[in-house]
Amino acid sequence: MLRRIGAEFFGTFWLVFGGCGAAVLAAAFPALGIGFAGVALAFGLTVLTMIYAVGHISGGHFNPAVTIGFWAGGRFRGADVLPYIVAQVIGAIAAAAVLYLIASGKPGFEPGGFAANGYGTLSPGKYSLLACLVCEIVCTFFFVTVILGATTPRAPAGFAGVAIGLTLTIVHLVSIPVTNTSVNPARSTGPALFAGGPYIHQLWLFWLAPIVGALFAGWLARWLQRQERVEQPLPQAPTARVT
Image 1 (tube, rainbow, N blue to C red):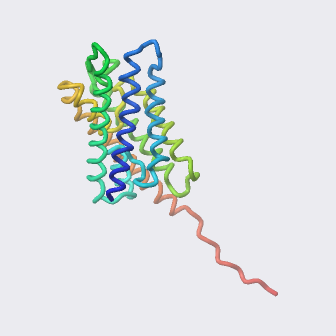
Image 2: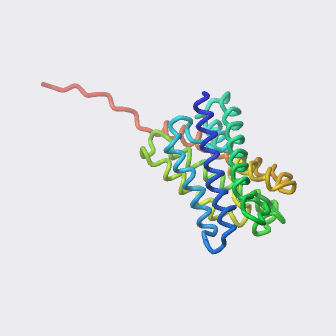
């Protein structure tokens, strides 16, 4: 269990450091011009690389919503949910701390939003609470649905990481203007602690919405897999050969 928790810590650390780092550090140099697409790709690549690096150890969740989705889908033990979430949150906070240390080494640095998530006045596009809530639920639902589908035994072997990384990239391309993209309570928690009060006060939404979306995805996956088992043709009994 310790190895699995360690893998979740390092995977979540890399996700937050790489994804949020692309937003925080590249933002200090607008001429680099990576924009939303660059940040979205950074998040997708962090997940893709860690799935292949340590996914075989822990399952490659790196996200409390994913862990809850696997549990809701009947593919993860309830006793392991809390240890995974704790490791993920600690990994995200550690990554945000290292990122803050690096970013603050630049003269005139101000944390500002520090790649944190928000709604209303803290939303990049000033979207309402309801709009942000719906966006996070829907994006998390599809993200976790892809993960659960891509990791089933009947899915093409070896390609789960690619599908998951590309899905996270799409999710960011859609939702960065709305919430700055969470779909991951741990990823939201780390930067919010360094961004300060207003972002911490809004953190509840970025726990609630991803968990709701993940629960729906898990329940859907459980139903689909049950249907798949029911609809599979029964094996044919061997026929006797007449000699």
